Amino acid sequence: MADDRSKRGFRDLILSMAVVAVFVAFLFAVVWRPTPEAVKPVETKFALEAARSQADYPVLFPQGLPAGWTPTSARFEGSTWFLGYVTPEQQYVAVTQTDGDVAEFVKEQTLEGQPDGSRTIAGQQWQQYVAGDQRSLVRTGNGSTTVVTGTVDYDQLQAFVEKLQS
Image (cartoon, rainbow, N blue to C red):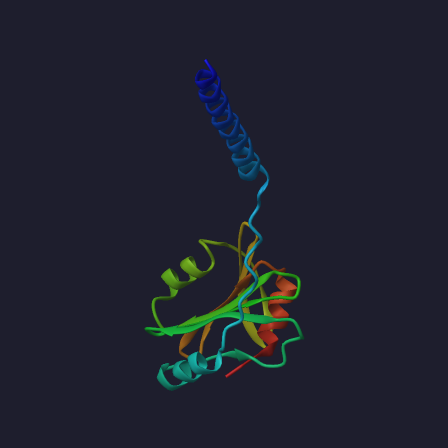
């Protein structure tokens, strides 16, 4: 009889622990939120050098950006230059250039954006596109198509364009 009690006590202990473990797992799943990954800056020098040595067009790079702009992507693939930044306000801005198919490139880089007017920047005409919360400025000239795009407003995109130099 004492043996029966000890078996029941042990079984009850295991069942109680299982119930508590299920409850803790449920709380963990409901309450736990992963912390967002920090912005990881990238080195732009080598990608820029590769692009400028291989591209058949003047490769643009921003000079004199305000403090807090973090480069997060820089690459030259095929004939396409891509450079992305996160702003101090955690918004995104990028410049892409190619000497490839204009229509397909613009469609891809503007996320199939719709024309939204135009503006003149430093004497050059730029077309505006909008797709959801992304805005883009597009210009074709000097042997390439340039798209400056991001989650900022057009005036901030223009300020970025004004910093671009070849």
